[in-house]
Length: 330
Image 1 (cartoon, rainbow, N blue to C red):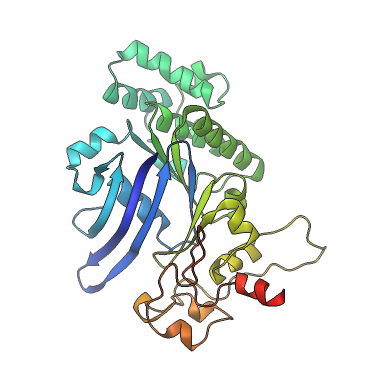
Image 2 (image 1 turned 45 degrees about the horizontal axis):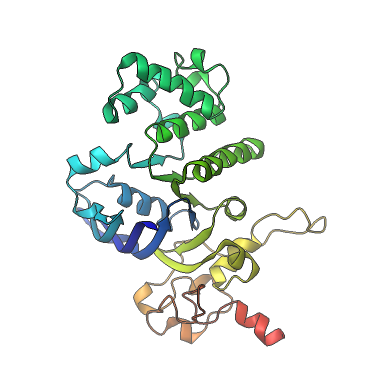
């Protein structure tokens, strides 16, 4: 059953003295209960803005949001701030990418955990503290009874990230959005945090949207993947299909930039040429065309639909899909 449905989501920022900037340009995807769906792309592609729009956390004065974000049938974009506040933490939760700035440095971990519990449940102070200790233990923090009285700076980066996950899980939300949850963590801690998140999702049937630029993280975590570029989804596919037969040239570029343990010694990485600033307006063609070795005049001849090179279950917004090279070689 579809739990979250995002349809034609657009976010435009306005600033006095500057032209409007569209950060999210018609993004659509859905998430089912118990499913992990990835939003993948370089920094500046619109992933985090999409998540903030879903949670209703964008500034209302400078951000214009349109489209539809339906959670269990209710349109979150039409909800009042009070209605969203009641849902956040209870039905919807978010794990932000920087635990040091997301946690309040002057409040104990126990205070920050019990605040969520007491806001959204009927637990009294003593019961909330007991639940906070159990939550810290559940996410793998040693000696949780002592840790509830400590402050964020007394924990390592990996432990702080676990505290954020515990806060997100406090009220058993039905949807978790994890925004780069392994940023700045070493490889071992990354694996532990991802195992923790996916294990809890499978165990409780919670849906999760995982935002990342790392396709290595996607490979071991997501069920389905949405690749974003310049505010639009350029490819959608089940995880196995995406890695076996990537279609958009941006996706193949991201895959080529991932280090491989089976590569011959001395093999150089192949970064995607240019930066996200090197792009065309989507109305005039493929935004990725200036960075793409396969681009030609057809890529600059008007807006390209997501299913332009359509194949059932694996659409891509590409005139010259990479899997066409495989067909020709055969």
